[in-house]
Image (cartoon, rainbow, N blue to C red):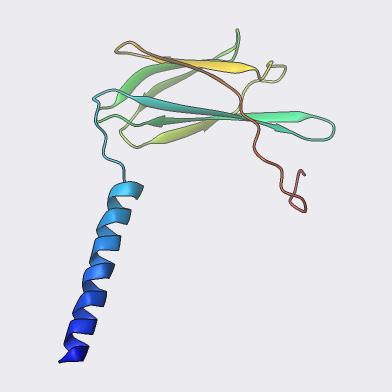
Length: 124
């Protein structure tokens, strides 16, 4: 009888943790049109590289997406909900900030962030 209670308690705990993880990992979109922009600048010894990750975090597709690297533009026709795109800034970009606009009045400007360097890893 004790084993039944023990196994049911363990099973119930696993179920609660699983549901919590599902809701935290797979965030539910709350807006029809939303975008997440994550510009990253990686400073190496002799040069810097950059990349911009754009994710549609809304419920509906985004259209006419324009990425402005500071005078130089990139264009994407559309992004489906949950879809992302990784873009590389053109050569000689300042890598200070990036502005992303899309239909339905979306406009996001973000500064490039520099990832934390861990000793022993490539690029450190």
